[in-house]
Image 1 (spheres, rainbow over the protein chains, first blue to last red):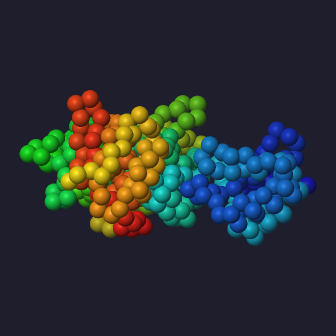
Image 2: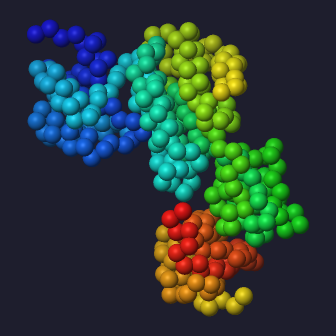
Image 3: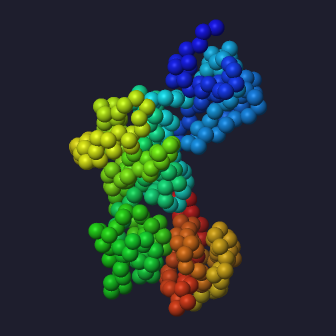
Length: 288
Length: 83
């Protein structure tokens, strides 16, 4: 039986050391699986695997020890139960996410919903090398946006409703960059110092500090691998609606300048951050 | 505004701080004031916010000389609990 390794790899089959065996990578968006999907994975792994599941470092899942003779059956049975295969090689990988504002008190953006939407739009898109995207609900960075080729983290520009302020000064005490000072009993915000972390909005006991504008910070070029580097801030505040445009611009930049198997951060470093930031600026400043 | 009861959670950590506060408020009736002593850091970051989210009203919050906080909360029953 002939095996097209490259084709198998693109489709989420990873060749194991063990002769004729593959690990099957599954598609997971934002680290969530429905119980129906879990049930399907359980059944398939039980039938064709070796009694266990492997959890990847990026909220993914793999079923190890699938014999090549069962590859078609595994693919079909997974698909019938609502589970798609993951990808390998030069593609956009599954989009990661933390719990975000849907569940987490610190979240400023709905990272889960965003990751599902972005996964739907960009999953498996072909690029020169692997391309990883993560969405975090706030800049506490639980979803590690700085470790991904492109990362987004929720940020919040605060607005004050003075009549609700109880003059407790908690916001001034808690602001991590001392952007808030109490003046005549009310908080005064320095927009220059503010990093839009939203801690004042989260902590305010009376709801006087509220959401002015929610957006995301964009990090690019992050990676682990042999030459680990955290992503750098590409855009410090961007409306959520511009995320797809920012991804499109990054993928286009990658396709234009990237060499085979090169990581995105390396491409940016080679071509220049200035050029990349210009491309991002052009793509995201346009009116929606 | 006379507190009905005083609760000291300075030595407790999250989420015990919130649980104790919740239980203390449950023993009161709507409109009663609970006085709470709590530590700086995580407790003051989380407890006042959580109480507000549960529909209570933080009337006052002041930092003490020793770095702890004194808070007055007005019980508002189940108001706003799920909104």
